[in-house]
Length: 194
Ligand SMILES: [Zn+2]
Image (tube, rainbow, N blue to C red):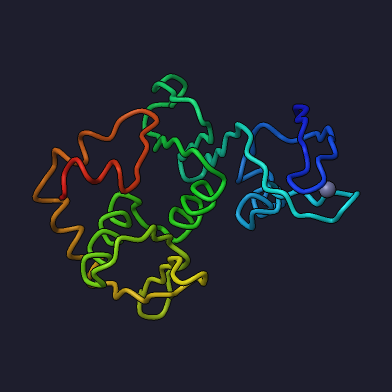
């Protein structure tokens, strides 16, 4: 645990919270769920009741999936990623939650970013998309994006994912460029697709 001093965004009251620095998702499913639901990164001010969002450095480790995701606002190197592991760096709790959902669904996050790009092109929108879920029955993916002050949902067929997988197979340099603690997002993808 580490101490985090925070200030309520509404009333300015200051508090010190004890927050975990990491989770072993296989050993502590309860804490994993607090990460996945976002509960770990919210805090209700006891004075005014405002729900505040927290952002603090955090390591998500799932040994059963050979997965390490580091939440950090400062750039990190590849150090500390064991051989054979998937290493990712994210900058916000929202990014971390999305990655956990993607990997929990058994999906490849490179392909999910490609699916978002393709879906934005089809909708003719430039919006930040987030993966929400994979529907087990027919493999339909649900993404969400903000529009007009609301969150819109868009369903994307699994064929889009498979098409992206084909593109990735034909372009091995994309996959090979991903090493260490990689940041895999739309900015990363834009070096390959424009
Ligand atoms: Zn407050």
